[in-house]
Length: 361
Image 1 (cartoon, one colour):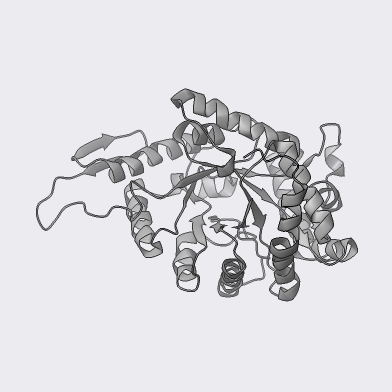
Image 2 (spheres, rainbow, N blue to C red):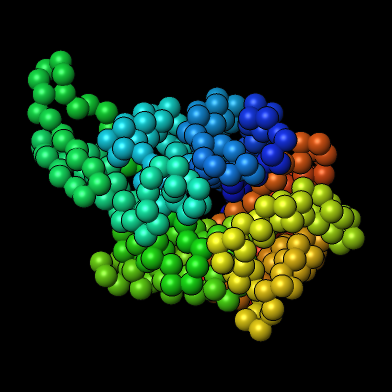
């Protein structure tokens, strides 16, 4: 079992971009020191609570102050980039990372992002597929080609000795690629299974998270792939303290709770997707509050309590490889967040390994 971080990144609207980025870099450095295996950094454009539009710029900074942790845009939203340009940026960053880059890709879901870029909802997933096809074609194919797509045109020119395509990724044929899934029957996770990409579940309701592996397997059948549960990442809200009471206070009544109260739950109500937080289908949507998700979805409590919740999650979904901890802006009370990260790695994880009765992976 491995640990990683998932930085949306979440910051309150009053936090300026510089201070927000400094906090995220501090979290990544600590994760590296503690032995967390990876950190994924989100990309958004019109969300005041997720204010980082260029995760690759943060990754470039984090590479200089970390040693072993792998870093990933989580994810580059492909409809908002020309695939030829992004293929070159990612390949270049892969050289800077020297094997520590994972490429996360997504279709984009925030309505105001789609509107800002003039992308119609429903077309964004098709655009993602076409963009990824072009990017992989540029990286893999040696011979010149012309690509005439519905959304983009792209050419690989023959060139000459001094002017020709030359930028390829450091990792061959390309960095590992990961895709996220949220809803049951996720088409992106089916694509992950079909293409052999890393599947990542943005997790709340355990029942639908468990169904995500069926989506991965369904996609894998299309191409004859053999997906491994050890590659499966699941994100989760986690806060560990010495006691359950202290953990509840440090999460629900601090930045985690504020994030849900002022942003995450209102956003999902706006999108009509608040049901993803239900721990069973009979719950009334009006009862979905920060207090509700803290009780039913979050992994919060003492090391023993969190280890039990962690092991229960593992066994309920049938096993997975990496828990990605959603990171929040605790820059005003940093020691509480840092202590939680340390306790998770040093006190919780050993307990989880003891509690899991049968190794599934």
